[in-house]
Length: 566
Image (cartoon, rainbow, N blue to C red; front, side):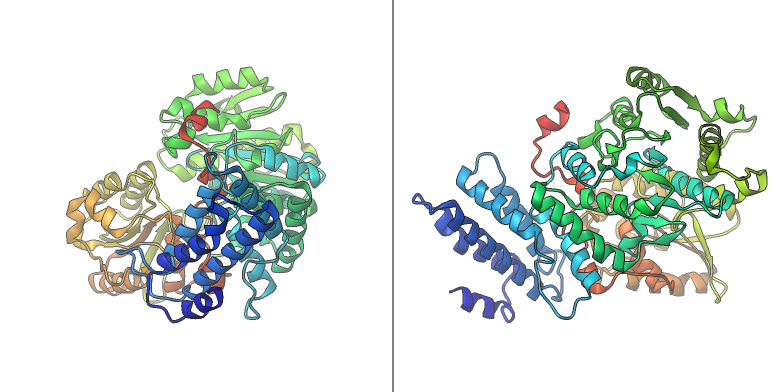
């Protein structure tokens, strides 16, 4: 039966979901029976079932994806993960849960679920990393990361770390600080950890602006998985990614660390004594996880504040909440940018200038506490270093065909409001053409309304990123019905198609082309626009959504009541 199924997988025209579920049901029928075999035998069946399902996924990985019906290469991974969650459910038979965890530990020692001579070592290990959450459903807490950090010798406790959290601006502030430190002291090795990436996984961890080399990824990931196996640590995608960065940063003199989500329970928050903590801004985001009010979210972000260490906060935060949090945690100082740099006489409405001011205040504080990091802090170097922008943060591209393109990951209503205001201020007499795609966990309807208040509907192009968190085209149209008159194609939802169409129309009508929304659409958009930069291969891209969300965002096994109780 197994051999027949494996052979037929490649030629079957049935739904990929049906194939995977059929494989799982057949292989787990023995385990679910009243006369369950031994745990060891169950583990063998679990292993075989997951491997068969993985082959089904791989066999269909190049099939056409019909996103309206849910069939194609996205669907098997979703079904696969759902079944894994079922196995880990508390109400599931204990023997079945034991078998699931046993096979998970065995898989941790494997270089990849899939063996293929066509994959490079880097591709094999990054594919393995992306598939980690299929076997280790995420729960809230820092225990996994604490155990990993301890097993690695706690490398982040042996060098200055600038730890940054915030709803918006944290990535920009992190880059500005890291860049300025490099300019101030060319001999300094400055590590930078940020997420998510745009085109290559390796963007997430850099030293002096150079991404982690592929051979380092291939060297370090097996070591980390080996630790997980020996210490029985069910680490997730983001936890292993963070551990990989920490391993790489053993070569760094100072590290600028951006949180992934929140702060208190973020995997980066195992740093026990940072040089300083920074909270850039507070807004409503990830409300199921962080809380549904600004105050609750502020407390989560404030979780990175540490005893006897200073904290710097941006202007758009609830100061009363964060000041009380800092007092309770015993922070040495609670400072605003005005406290450090003096009160500014002009209102700052440009987010980038606000981020630059936050970075400048942080560098001033850092110089006082860690003078050894600085050779000379001149105003010229300070301005140069803090003027840099991360990719896709109001990134302006002047093309050879005289067309101006702006890329921006405005992914929520506050960011979209800022982008539209910035566009009008920078190009007051211009007309705009917008290509936009969103994440499904954002207020898509409000973003659509904001766009149509400024842009004509026939100058809007809707796209659906190839990622599980991407908002479906149907959802965008339903959330703002006026968007039905915009440019979209239910049969061809690719970003490249709409980019090419928008390029032609923008040139013809002498418009500025703006590509905005979720970071998940930017890699394909940049490729379509002709960017020559490191980019992960199709072999990696096809499983890049296998973890469904960044590890600390899933909480697949954590009931709502537990989240609220943490």
